[in-house]
Image (spheres, each protein chain N blue to C red):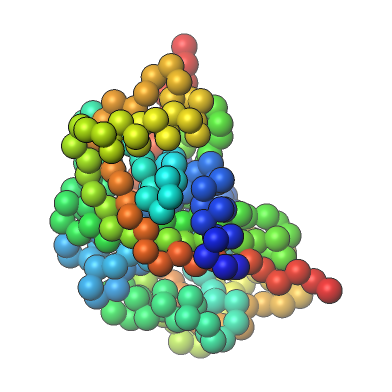
Length: 139
Length: 139
C-alpha cells in the first residue's frame, strides 16, 4: 500500500487508536476520533479533563510528544485484514486560528459534534512516517 | 466497569491493539489477535519474522517489556462506546509447556489457526492494571 492510499484510509476511517508513552517508556493506547487535514491529524478531548484517563494522554504528550496512530479493519476472514499506521509529533493547541480550523474539520467529519462541539483541549499531530499493510488475497 | 467485567470483555473481544514503546520512548501500535488465559494474554506472530513490522514489536519488547493492550467498541451512536485497557509486562516464550499452552488457547479461540497454527514467536503478557470505560447511556 503506498503512502497516498494509506493516507486515504486514514482520512476515511471513523475511529483510530492513539498510542503515547510517558517519560518512563510506559505505553498508553486509547480509541479516538480525529480528522485529517493535509498531513496533520486533529483530535479533541470531549470535555475539560477531569478524569485520569484524559489527563494521562495529555500528560504523556507534554512529557513525550512522539505518538503513533493506527487504523485497521478486523474481519473473521483473515484475508481481508488491513491496517495503516502513522507516527507523528503532537502539539497541544492554544485557542487561535489552528484551533478553530481543527474544530471545524472535526465537526465536518463527525455530525455527532454538530449539537455539542468538543469543549476540551485540542491536539494536532503532524504526521511523518505513514505505512500500510493489507493481507494477501487468496488466488 | 469493574475488573472482572473488563477481563470478560478482554477475553471475548476478537481483536485488540497492542502498544509497545522502544527505548527512546517512540510508541508503536498494531492490531493483534490474542487469547486470555487467567490474567496472562498470549499472542503469536503468524510467521517467522521477516518483515520490519514484525521485528519492531519484538525488538521493542526486548528493549522495554512494558506494554498496553486495548479493546474497544466503536459505534456511530457515541452512547454505545466502550473500551477496556490492560497494561502488562511481556515475555517472549521459548518452546516448552507454556508455549504449547499458548498455542492451544489461541487455536481454541480462533478457528482460523486450525489448519495453520502460528509458526512464529509466541509472547506472553502478564497483565497488571485492567480498567474499562463505558459511555453513559441517555436517560
